[in-house]
Length: 77
Image 1 (tube, rainbow, N blue to C red):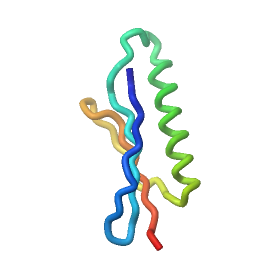
Image 2: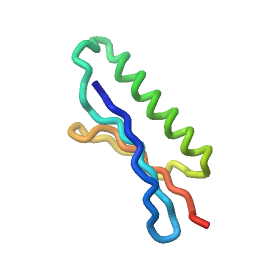
Image 3: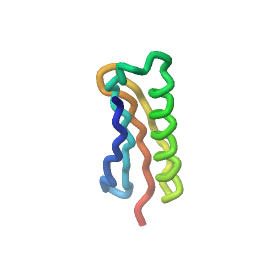
Image 4: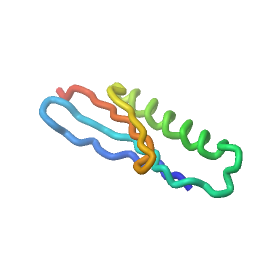
C-alpha cells in the first residue's frame, strides 16, 4: 500500500524546500487503480496545503522504483 510522506523543510541558501513523496508500493487488491488514484489525490492535497504556507511547486518526477516526488520551495526571509 502506498505511503505519502512529507520531508523538510530543508533550508539551503536563501530557500526552504519541502518534498511530498508518494512511494510506489502497490496495493495488491487494487484491481482498478482507484486506490492509487486516491493516494495521488491525497499527495496533491498535501502539496496544496504546503502551497498555502508560501511554497511553490518547482518540480515533480516519477520513477518506477522510487514513486512520485513533488518538490516545493519558498524564499526564506
